[in-house]
Amino acid sequence: MRHLVGFGNRRCGSVELLTHIDLRHSGLLQLYCSAAFSALAAEKKAFLEHDPRALYPSDASVFSAATFELGGPHSRTHPSGTPYRHQAAGWSILTALGSYSSMRGGHIILWDLGLVVSFPVGSSILIPTGLVRYSFVTVRPNERRYSLLQWAGSGIPRWFRNGKRSDVEFAVNATREEHVAREERRQAAHAEALDLFPIEAELPDDCDMSLPFMWEENAARKNTD
Image (cartoon, one colour):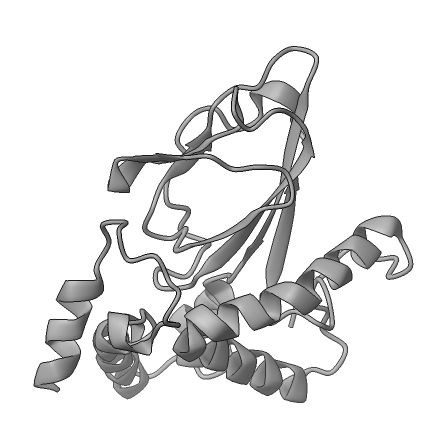
């Protein structure tokens, strides 16, 4: 099978930065989205047990992918879309980098939530990027805004659902019974994905609940389970 490739040279500065950030972000994800953290940690463990040579972006990270956005002042000023490569219920961590005044620009726009949020350099935010589109307000010409997105790819879960095979290998070699079983797993995955979203009772006491999201909907669903 094809190996995941992080940054190749594990000694380069980008990996050192990613590792430093991951040590903090693993705790952030575990604190606010413990179910998602546990699911990603279990997925990583199972995948590396199958292929110890596979590389994640950082040993300290439970995320299977990471993207540095280095496009300068106009980087991602249009909605991101909801990439099919991202897990639909997979939380991502976005970190603001660069040098700019967060009072004058660099705000993050969460299009599907109708929110514009100040996003100072060094700040991080948890976003389900498979569901919520985002972009940034342009910064001034003499400023620079970059970002680091750590995200959960959809390829590994599909590989497991295919019986540790790629989509192409499954389509060519799977039996009718295996196709039926995979479809059943796919339909069950919707309810399993919802369990990865926290409800208000599961969040820390100091969490700001003023932002509109899906807490009430998910809480109602969990109370009926």
